[in-house]
Length: 317
Ligand code: NAP
Ligand code: GLV
Image 1 (cartoon, rainbow, N blue to C red):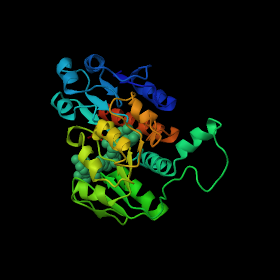
Image 2 (image 1 turned 90 degrees about the horizontal axis):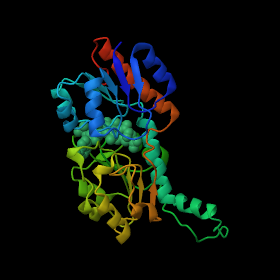
Image 3 (image 1 turned 45 degrees about the vertical axis):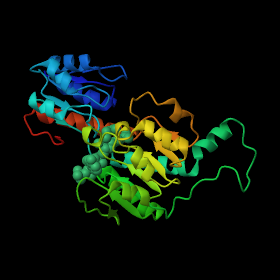
Image 4 (image 1 turned 120 degrees about the horizontal axis):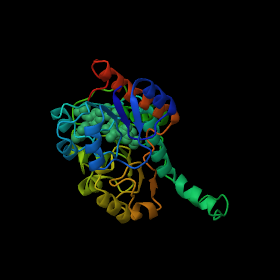
């Protein structure tokens, strides 16, 4: 039986199916794999089902030499924690889990957008603290969402799902910035210049992949380009945003608020972002529904099975 390492506890039904076909080890800790652990796993297992936070960088492949492992079936669509070029050079195939998490992640994007706009986090904290003095025409005043313009950075599967929600649900005009020209099934205008788009919208939602190409794509200049009333949402990867510049933009009033699912050094979230009232911070919940996480596990396992049966990986990256 081939040896399969599953690097986190995933849906029991998926683990049971994996055990029926492979000699399975399930890592019991919630922490990501260190470089040493990743290198050791590459040398010791035939197949690995890793996830974000596991350090499959070029160094891990270099340390592993000629790895025993032949497939990394990632649990998650984003695979910026895996050096895909180094994996290929080492003869390790890589797959991911697109589509099955698109709706859940877009829903978290809308949750953050609405929560930041309507200040419901602040309101909830006030009620829980017993500080609410009753309804009045003043008090916590939010920003209207319906009819406002949204700008999407990265118009892929998740970006388009956010666009559909904004257009059909909230009557919002949609602008987007994307690496390559894109035709989409919702009324939306592509803007070639990022700063121009950022300056034209009320809400910014970031949905590009992480990695070297997009690191700090949203930097101090990008925040300067936004309206002072802009609400910024990141459901992509923390590293896409210069976090220090974001904190400064929020502090100085360069932008109005931010809704954040992802951070540079997860699970560490800068104290400034946790303390400000105009931030909504959630712990990387994008795909976190039971249904979605089960579907992700099943898709990742299907890729391991395809490899074991000598078939092409259905979701090869
Ligand atoms: P996708 O379909 O591949 O979409 C990515 C889009 O970003 C593509 O349209 C791509 O353009 C564009 N893009 C790539 N690099 C760019 C750049 N430098 N500048 C502008 N646009 C660029 O991926 P997806 O399924 O929507 O997922 C997107 C990312 O969301 C994932 O990679 C992951 O990091 C993140 N994510 C987060 C969560 C969460 O829990 N918060 C959950 C799922 C995914 P092209 O058309 O040129 O390829
Ligand atoms: C989660 O962040 C993913 O990339 O699937």
